[in-house]
Length: 160
Figure 1 (tube, rainbow, N blue to C red):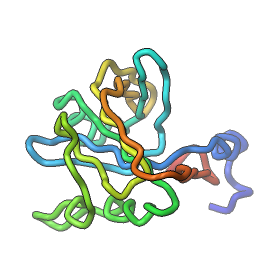
Figure 2 (figure 1 turned 90 degrees about the vertical axis):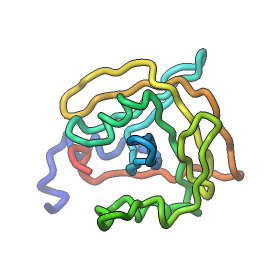
Figure 3 (figure 1 turned 90 degrees about the horizontal axis):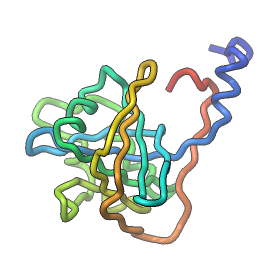
Figure 4 (figure 1 turned 45 degrees about the vertical axis):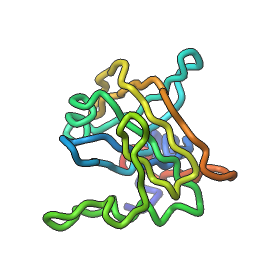
């Protein structure tokens, strides 16, 4: 759709900058992840973040079942780590097969080539429109290298 046909609300929302993250959880004994951008810090004590997950995504049920999620922070050097999450993997394969990962002390999968990671325990949720906002207390984290996170702007703030 040409930019001139995008509604003023969609264009204005698209000017709100977002970070880019690989959000991970567990589905049984396997890692499950997706590229997330609706993420923000919402508290200092305890340190708390939230991530919005589409109501129809399998990731939401997995986060609820595991009670945990992790965020791997993407920076310009690690943008290539997003591509395995853009398409459905072949049967028997996982996006994690192509990435350097490790498990945190609490069992979350994080990307070792990301800028930083945070490991979170779910503390609550709030349904809103087509997403559910999951709140998590940050229980562990690590900055893997110096740098700044990748920031993303949308042309249309009403669609990915």
